[in-house]
Image (tube, rainbow, N blue to C red; front, side):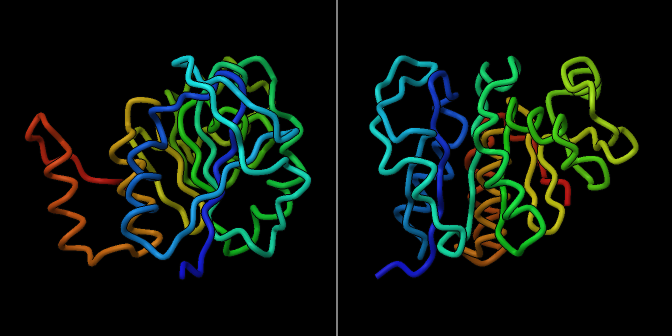
Length: 197
């Protein structure tokens, strides 16, 4: 019986490959049950054209049941979309609940001032400055594939492996030595690319 919950936010155009590695291993090798939700609970189509039926609508997400909230990237973030999730983020951002955001989802966090005083990364500092006019966190920006700051994980859109490994470390799904070996296995270039903490 799994005793923790990971919630994945789904929307039309979500980048399905970005959270895939993290989700597969959370589902198979951890105490986290994976749940999916969308704004209205209706079927969505990923950027790859895959149709997904979420488990629940946003209104049914009980904050006290969330241990990990995953926000995948996707073009809607760059167009001001997904604002419906703002109240949920406001409820969890200053709690022990882990929020993991990748690619365009980091832009959403930046635009809504949640990255103004916390170490973070994204698809580039200029990307945030250009597309998030309310962003005030440039001094906290880190030029790294993935950054973990307490309960917040941010990653650029090319860092799916680093993103997954940061989630695995935060969720303690294996000992650090094993996770290092897994990271080396997945980094096909053979480079010893380590997370930024």
